[in-house]
Amino acid sequence: MTIQLSKRAQNLKTSPTLFLVAKARELAAQGHDVISLTVGEPDWPTFKAPSEAGIEAIQKGITKYTPANGTVELRKAISEKIKSELGFDYTPKEITVASGAKYIIFAALQMLCSPGDEVIVATPYWVSYPTMIELADGIPHIVECGETENFKMTPALLERAINAKTRAFLFCSPSNPTGLQYSAEELQGLAEVLKKHPQVAIISDDIYNRLVFDGSKIAPHILQVAPELRDRTVIVNGGSKAYSMTGWRIGWAAGPERLITAMADYQSQSTGSPSSISQHALLAGLKTSEADIMQVVQTLIARKESGMKELSTVPGFKVAEPQGAFYFWVDIKSYLGKTYQDRVIRTSKDFCDVLLEKFFVATVPGAECGTEGFMRLSFAVSEDTLKRAVVRMKDFVGQLA
Image 1: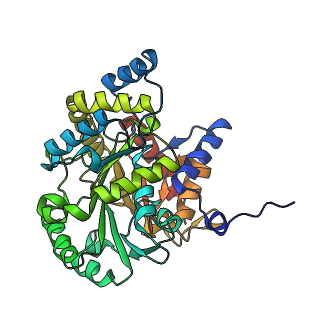
Image 2 (image 1 turned 60 degrees about the vertical axis):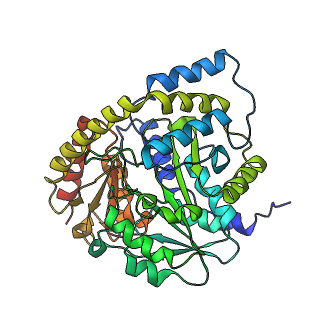
Protein backbone atom coordinates (compact mmCIF):
# COMPACT_ATOMS: atom_id res chain seq x y z
CA MET A 1 0.00 0.00 0.00
CA THR A 2 1.28 3.44 -0.90
CA ILE A 3 0.73 6.00 1.83
CA GLN A 4 -1.20 8.97 0.50
CA LEU A 5 0.01 12.32 1.74
CA SER A 6 -2.39 15.17 2.36
CA LYS A 7 -2.57 18.11 0.02
CA ARG A 8 -0.97 20.16 2.77
CA ALA A 9 1.96 17.76 2.97
CA GLN A 10 2.38 17.74 -0.80
CA ASN A 11 2.62 21.53 -0.86
CA LEU A 12 4.91 21.78 2.18
CA LYS A 13 8.34 23.31 1.66
CA THR A 14 11.41 22.67 3.78
CA SER A 15 12.74 25.69 5.68
CA PRO A 16 15.41 27.08 3.32
CA THR A 17 17.74 28.13 6.12
CA LEU A 18 17.56 24.77 7.89
CA PHE A 19 18.09 23.01 4.55
CA LEU A 20 21.23 25.10 3.96
CA VAL A 21 22.46 24.38 7.47
CA ALA A 22 22.07 20.66 6.81
CA LYS A 23 23.85 20.97 3.47
CA ALA A 24 26.72 22.87 5.08
CA ARG A 25 27.05 20.21 7.77
CA GLU A 26 27.05 17.48 5.13
CA LEU A 27 29.96 19.16 3.34
CA ALA A 28 31.77 19.63 6.65
CA ALA A 29 31.29 15.92 7.41
CA GLN A 30 33.05 15.20 4.12
CA GLY A 31 36.10 17.05 5.45
CA HIS A 32 35.58 20.51 3.95
CA ASP A 33 36.24 23.65 5.98
CA VAL A 34 32.75 25.14 5.71
CA ILE A 35 31.97 28.62 7.00
CA SER A 36 28.26 28.91 7.71
CA LEU A 37 26.69 32.36 7.67
CA THR A 38 23.16 31.02 7.27
CA VAL A 39 21.21 30.29 10.40
CA GLY A 40 20.12 33.10 12.71
CA GLU A 41 21.82 31.64 15.75
CA PRO A 42 24.11 33.53 18.15
CA ASP A 43 27.57 32.06 18.55
CA TRP A 44 27.79 33.18 22.19
CA PRO A 45 26.65 30.71 24.86
CA THR A 46 23.42 30.97 26.81
CA PHE A 47 24.06 33.39 29.67
CA LYS A 48 25.24 32.03 33.02
CA ALA A 49 22.09 32.65 35.07
CA PRO A 50 19.60 30.89 32.75
CA SER A 51 22.09 28.07 32.14
CA GLU A 52 22.46 27.46 35.87
CA ALA A 53 18.70 27.73 36.32
CA GLY A 54 18.20 25.01 33.72
CA ILE A 55 20.56 22.73 35.61
CA GLU A 56 18.77 23.63 38.84
CA ALA A 57 15.43 22.68 37.29
CA ILE A 58 16.74 19.20 36.51
CA GLN A 59 18.37 18.76 39.91
CA LYS A 60 15.29 19.93 41.80
CA GLY A 61 12.86 17.90 39.72
CA ILE A 62 11.22 20.84 37.96
CA THR A 63 10.72 18.47 35.06
CA LYS A 64 6.96 17.86 34.89
CA TYR A 65 4.16 19.23 32.75
CA THR A 66 3.18 22.84 33.27
CA PRO A 67 0.06 24.66 32.07
CA ALA A 68 -0.07 24.71 28.26
CA ASN A 69 0.44 28.48 28.26
CA GLY A 70 3.38 28.39 30.67
CA THR A 71 3.75 28.82 34.42
CA VAL A 72 2.05 31.75 36.07
CA GLU A 73 5.39 32.79 37.53
CA LEU A 74 6.99 33.04 34.09
CA ARG A 75 4.01 34.84 32.56
CA LYS A 76 4.14 37.39 35.38
CA ALA A 77 7.86 37.91 34.71
CA ILE A 78 7.16 38.40 30.99
CA SER A 79 4.46 40.91 31.92
CA GLU A 80 6.96 42.84 34.05
CA LYS A 81 9.52 42.77 31.23
CA ILE A 82 7.00 44.13 28.71
CA LYS A 83 6.00 46.83 31.19
CA SER A 84 9.62 47.91 31.66
CA GLU A 85 10.38 47.89 27.91
CA LEU A 86 7.17 49.10 26.27
CA GLY A 87 5.19 50.59 29.14
CA PHE A 88 2.12 48.35 28.72
CA ASP A 89 0.39 46.23 31.34
CA TYR A 90 -0.54 42.66 30.39
CA THR A 91 -2.18 40.20 32.74
CA PRO A 92 -0.94 36.59 32.82
CA LYS A 93 -4.13 35.65 30.93
CA GLU A 94 -2.99 37.90 28.07
CA ILE A 95 0.34 36.06 27.76
CA THR A 96 1.15 32.60 26.45
CA VAL A 97 4.46 30.73 26.40
CA ALA A 98 5.29 28.08 23.81
CA SER A 99 8.10 26.04 22.28
CA GLY A 100 9.81 28.92 20.50
CA ALA A 101 8.72 32.25 19.03
CA LYS A 102 8.40 30.52 15.66
CA TYR A 103 5.68 28.29 17.06
CA ILE A 104 4.04 31.32 18.66
CA ILE A 105 3.68 32.92 15.21
CA PHE A 106 2.47 29.61 13.79
CA ALA A 107 -0.18 29.28 16.51
CA ALA A 108 -1.31 32.89 16.09
CA LEU A 109 -1.80 32.38 12.35
CA GLN A 110 -3.67 29.12 12.94
CA MET A 111 -6.07 30.92 15.27
CA LEU A 112 -6.52 33.97 13.05
CA CYS A 113 -6.86 32.55 9.55
CA SER A 114 -9.78 30.82 7.89
CA PRO A 115 -9.45 29.41 4.36
CA GLY A 116 -8.87 32.21 1.88
CA ASP A 117 -7.94 34.87 4.45
CA GLU A 118 -4.95 37.00 3.47
CA VAL A 119 -1.98 37.97 5.60
CA ILE A 120 0.09 40.89 4.40
CA VAL A 121 3.87 40.43 4.42
CA ALA A 122 6.45 42.79 2.94
CA THR A 123 9.51 41.67 1.03
CA PRO A 124 12.16 40.84 1.97
CA TYR A 125 10.67 38.57 4.63
CA TRP A 126 11.82 35.86 6.99
CA VAL A 127 11.78 32.68 4.95
CA SER A 128 9.14 30.89 7.04
CA TYR A 129 6.39 33.52 7.00
CA PRO A 130 4.67 32.56 3.70
CA THR A 131 4.66 28.82 4.42
CA MET A 132 3.31 29.31 7.94
CA ILE A 133 0.47 31.39 6.49
CA GLU A 134 -0.27 28.70 3.91
CA LEU A 135 -0.28 26.01 6.62
CA ALA A 136 -3.02 28.05 8.34
CA ASP A 137 -5.06 27.88 5.11
CA GLY A 138 -4.30 31.55 4.56
CA ILE A 139 -2.94 33.31 1.51
CA PRO A 140 0.33 35.26 1.80
CA HIS A 141 -0.31 38.70 0.31
CA ILE A 142 3.27 39.58 -0.57
CA VAL A 143 4.01 43.29 -1.02
CA GLU A 144 7.19 44.11 -2.92
CA CYS A 145 9.31 46.55 -0.92
CA GLY A 146 12.64 47.17 -2.61
CA GLU A 147 15.45 49.67 -2.47
CA THR A 148 13.10 52.58 -3.20
CA GLU A 149 11.18 51.76 -0.01
CA ASN A 150 14.40 50.93 1.89
CA PHE A 151 13.06 47.35 2.08
CA LYS A 152 10.21 48.37 4.40
CA MET A 153 6.44 48.59 4.13
CA THR A 154 5.11 52.08 3.43
CA PRO A 155 1.67 53.44 4.37
CA ALA A 156 0.70 53.77 0.70
CA LEU A 157 1.64 50.17 -0.09
CA LEU A 158 -0.11 48.89 3.03
CA GLU A 159 -3.29 50.81 2.20
CA ARG A 160 -3.26 49.39 -1.32
CA ALA A 161 -2.78 45.83 -0.05
CA ILE A 162 -5.65 45.78 2.46
CA ASN A 163 -8.91 44.36 1.17
CA ALA A 164 -11.99 42.55 2.44
CA LYS A 165 -10.00 39.30 2.79
CA THR A 166 -7.16 40.81 4.82
CA ARG A 167 -6.92 39.15 8.23
CA ALA A 168 -3.53 40.26 9.51
CA PHE A 169 -0.37 42.24 8.89
CA LEU A 170 2.83 40.43 9.91
CA PHE A 171 6.16 42.21 10.19
CA CYS A 172 9.53 42.05 11.97
CA SER A 173 11.60 44.98 13.27
CA PRO A 174 14.59 44.93 13.31
CA SER A 175 14.21 42.86 10.19
CA ASN A 176 15.31 39.40 9.36
CA PRO A 177 16.84 39.47 6.70
CA THR A 178 17.93 43.12 6.32
CA GLY A 179 18.77 44.25 9.86
CA LEU A 180 16.84 47.46 9.14
CA GLN A 181 14.24 48.68 11.61
CA TYR A 182 11.14 50.84 11.40
CA SER A 183 11.48 54.28 12.93
CA ALA A 184 8.78 55.66 15.21
CA GLU A 185 7.66 57.94 12.36
CA GLU A 186 7.42 55.01 9.92
CA LEU A 187 5.42 52.98 12.42
CA GLN A 188 3.13 55.94 13.00
CA GLY A 189 2.42 56.05 9.27
CA LEU A 190 1.55 52.37 9.20
CA ALA A 191 -0.59 52.75 12.32
CA GLU A 192 -2.66 55.50 10.73
CA VAL A 193 -3.55 53.12 7.91
CA LEU A 194 -4.30 50.21 10.26
CA LYS A 195 -6.60 52.35 12.41
CA LYS A 196 -8.92 52.64 9.42
CA HIS A 197 -9.20 48.85 9.08
CA PRO A 198 -10.26 47.39 12.43
CA GLN A 199 -10.64 43.87 10.99
CA VAL A 200 -6.85 43.60 10.49
CA ALA A 201 -4.86 41.98 13.29
CA ILE A 202 -1.22 43.00 13.74
CA ILE A 203 1.52 40.47 14.48
CA SER A 204 4.68 42.26 15.58
CA ASP A 205 7.66 39.89 15.51
CA ASP A 206 9.94 41.49 18.11
CA ILE A 207 12.50 38.70 18.40
CA TYR A 208 15.42 41.06 17.62
CA ASN A 209 14.07 44.17 19.37
CA ARG A 210 16.76 44.18 22.07
CA LEU A 211 19.62 43.86 19.56
CA VAL A 212 19.71 47.46 18.31
CA PHE A 213 22.76 49.55 17.52
CA ASP A 214 21.77 53.19 18.10
CA GLY A 215 22.17 53.16 21.88
CA SER A 216 18.48 52.57 22.54
CA LYS A 217 17.40 49.84 24.93
CA ILE A 218 14.76 48.61 22.52
CA ALA A 219 13.66 49.12 18.92
CA PRO A 220 10.71 51.49 18.28
CA HIS A 221 7.38 49.68 18.58
CA ILE A 222 4.03 50.20 16.90
CA LEU A 223 2.21 50.18 20.25
CA GLN A 224 4.37 53.02 21.54
CA VAL A 225 3.13 55.29 18.75
CA ALA A 226 -0.40 53.86 18.55
CA PRO A 227 -1.45 52.39 21.92
CA GLU A 228 -5.04 52.25 20.68
CA LEU A 229 -4.01 49.26 18.52
CA ARG A 230 -3.25 47.18 21.62
CA ASP A 231 -6.52 45.22 21.45
CA ARG A 232 -5.65 43.73 18.05
CA THR A 233 -1.88 43.47 18.26
CA VAL A 234 0.07 40.32 19.11
CA ILE A 235 3.61 41.01 20.24
CA VAL A 236 5.92 38.04 19.77
CA ASN A 237 9.28 37.46 21.42
CA GLY A 238 11.45 34.72 22.86
CA GLY A 239 14.73 33.62 24.34
CA SER A 240 16.47 32.60 21.12
CA LYS A 241 18.24 35.75 19.98
CA ALA A 242 18.96 38.22 22.78
CA TYR A 243 19.40 35.45 25.37
CA SER A 244 21.08 32.96 22.99
CA MET A 245 18.62 30.24 23.97
CA THR A 246 17.95 28.84 20.49
CA GLY A 247 18.09 25.19 21.52
CA TRP A 248 15.96 25.76 24.61
CA ARG A 249 12.96 26.44 22.29
CA ILE A 250 11.10 29.02 24.35
CA GLY A 251 9.02 31.96 23.13
CA TRP A 252 6.01 34.02 24.16
CA ALA A 253 3.22 36.25 22.97
CA ALA A 254 1.19 39.02 24.57
CA GLY A 255 -2.10 40.20 23.14
CA PRO A 256 -5.87 40.27 23.44
CA GLU A 257 -7.07 37.63 25.89
CA ARG A 258 -9.51 35.98 23.48
CA LEU A 259 -6.78 35.29 20.91
CA ILE A 260 -4.16 34.36 23.50
CA THR A 261 -6.57 31.87 25.08
CA ALA A 262 -7.24 30.31 21.67
CA MET A 263 -3.50 30.05 21.01
CA ALA A 264 -2.96 28.39 24.39
CA ASP A 265 -5.76 25.90 23.68
CA TYR A 266 -4.19 25.17 20.29
CA GLN A 267 -0.83 24.60 22.00
CA SER A 268 -2.50 22.24 24.48
CA GLN A 269 -3.72 20.10 21.57
CA SER A 270 -0.44 20.17 19.61
CA THR A 271 2.84 20.63 21.46
CA GLY A 272 1.36 20.48 24.94
CA SER A 273 3.19 22.57 27.51
CA PRO A 274 6.57 24.14 26.78
CA SER A 275 9.58 22.58 28.48
CA SER A 276 9.50 23.17 32.23
CA ILE A 277 13.30 23.28 32.24
CA SER A 278 13.40 25.95 29.54
CA GLN A 279 10.74 27.98 31.34
CA HIS A 280 12.76 27.93 34.56
CA ALA A 281 15.86 29.00 32.64
CA LEU A 282 14.07 31.83 30.85
CA LEU A 283 12.63 33.07 34.13
CA ALA A 284 16.16 33.53 35.44
CA GLY A 285 17.24 35.15 32.18
CA LEU A 286 14.46 37.72 32.27
CA LYS A 287 15.36 38.69 35.81
CA THR A 288 19.16 38.80 35.59
CA SER A 289 20.52 39.11 32.04
CA GLU A 290 20.26 42.84 31.31
CA ALA A 291 24.01 43.47 31.58
CA ASP A 292 24.70 40.40 29.44
CA ILE A 293 22.43 41.69 26.66
CA MET A 294 24.10 45.10 26.74
CA GLN A 295 27.50 43.41 26.34
CA VAL A 296 26.20 41.32 23.43
CA VAL A 297 24.97 44.46 21.68
CA GLN A 298 28.44 46.02 21.96
CA THR A 299 29.98 42.86 20.51
CA LEU A 300 27.53 42.92 17.60
CA ILE A 301 28.24 46.59 16.91
CA ALA A 302 31.96 45.79 16.66
CA ARG A 303 31.24 42.85 14.36
CA LYS A 304 28.93 44.95 12.22
CA GLU A 305 31.57 47.66 11.76
CA SER A 306 34.30 45.12 11.00
CA GLY A 307 32.03 43.23 8.61
CA MET A 308 30.95 46.36 6.75
CA LYS A 309 34.61 47.24 6.26
CA GLU A 310 35.48 43.77 4.98
CA LEU A 311 32.51 43.51 2.62
CA SER A 312 33.29 46.94 1.16
CA THR A 313 36.47 45.40 -0.30
CA VAL A 314 34.47 42.98 -2.48
CA PRO A 315 33.97 44.58 -5.91
CA GLY A 316 30.31 44.90 -6.86
CA PHE A 317 28.88 44.24 -3.40
CA LYS A 318 26.50 46.82 -1.94
CA VAL A 319 25.51 46.35 1.68
CA ALA A 320 22.61 47.92 3.60
CA GLU A 321 24.07 48.90 6.99
CA PRO A 322 22.04 47.05 9.63
CA GLN A 323 20.45 48.94 12.52
CA GLY A 324 19.82 45.82 14.57
CA ALA A 325 19.66 41.99 14.59
CA PHE A 326 22.81 40.38 13.12
CA TYR A 327 22.43 40.19 9.35
CA PHE A 328 24.02 41.81 6.31
CA TRP A 329 21.73 42.21 3.29
CA VAL A 330 24.11 42.18 0.34
CA ASP A 331 23.26 43.33 -3.19
CA ILE A 332 24.85 40.88 -5.65
CA LYS A 333 22.94 41.91 -8.78
CA SER A 334 26.12 43.00 -10.58
CA TYR A 335 27.18 39.33 -10.74
CA LEU A 336 23.97 37.87 -12.10
CA GLY A 337 24.38 36.82 -15.72
CA LYS A 338 28.09 36.12 -15.30
CA THR A 339 29.66 32.69 -15.62
CA TYR A 340 31.62 30.53 -13.21
CA GLN A 341 33.47 27.93 -15.29
CA ASP A 342 30.61 26.55 -17.42
CA ARG A 343 27.79 27.61 -15.10
CA VAL A 344 25.78 30.78 -15.70
CA ILE A 345 24.90 32.60 -12.48
CA ARG A 346 21.32 33.63 -13.24
CA THR A 347 19.87 33.95 -9.74
CA SER A 348 20.84 34.57 -6.16
CA LYS A 349 20.34 30.85 -5.56
CA ASP A 350 22.90 30.07 -8.28
CA PHE A 351 25.33 32.50 -6.70
CA CYS A 352 24.90 31.07 -3.20
CA ASP A 353 24.99 27.47 -4.43
CA VAL A 354 28.38 27.93 -6.10
CA LEU A 355 29.68 29.90 -3.12
CA LEU A 356 28.81 26.93 -0.90
CA GLU A 357 29.69 24.03 -3.18
CA LYS A 358 33.00 25.38 -4.51
CA PHE A 359 34.16 27.89 -1.88
CA PHE A 360 32.46 26.40 1.19
CA VAL A 361 30.69 29.53 2.44
CA ALA A 362 27.02 29.01 3.27
CA THR A 363 24.67 31.99 2.83
CA VAL A 364 20.94 32.53 2.25
CA PRO A 365 19.79 33.55 -1.26
CA GLY A 366 17.63 36.66 -1.34
CA ALA A 367 15.09 34.81 -3.48
CA GLU A 368 14.20 32.73 -0.41
CA CYS A 369 13.26 36.01 1.29
CA GLY A 370 11.16 37.11 -1.67
CA THR A 371 13.75 39.49 -3.18
CA GLU A 372 15.99 38.40 -6.04
CA GLY A 373 19.53 39.74 -6.48
CA PHE A 374 20.58 39.72 -2.81
CA MET A 375 21.98 37.36 -0.20
CA ARG A 376 21.76 37.33 3.58
CA LEU A 377 24.81 36.83 5.75
CA SER A 378 24.71 36.33 9.51
CA PHE A 379 27.40 38.15 11.46
CA ALA A 380 26.64 36.25 14.66
CA VAL A 381 30.11 34.77 14.13
CA SER A 382 33.58 35.91 15.12
CA GLU A 383 35.22 38.76 13.21
CA ASP A 384 37.95 36.35 12.07
CA THR A 385 35.38 33.90 10.72
CA LEU A 386 33.66 36.62 8.70
CA LYS A 387 37.01 37.87 7.38
CA ARG A 388 37.87 34.37 6.15
CA ALA A 389 34.47 34.12 4.49
CA VAL A 390 34.98 37.44 2.70
CA VAL A 391 38.36 36.25 1.37
CA ARG A 392 36.59 33.29 -0.23
CA MET A 393 33.85 35.53 -1.63
CA LYS A 394 36.50 37.75 -3.26
CA ASP A 395 38.10 34.64 -4.72
CA PHE A 396 34.74 33.54 -6.12
CA VAL A 397 33.70 36.82 -7.70
CA GLY A 398 37.21 37.24 -9.10
CA GLN A 399 36.69 34.06 -11.10
CA LEU A 400 33.35 35.12 -12.60
CA ALA A 401 33.50 35.91 -16.28
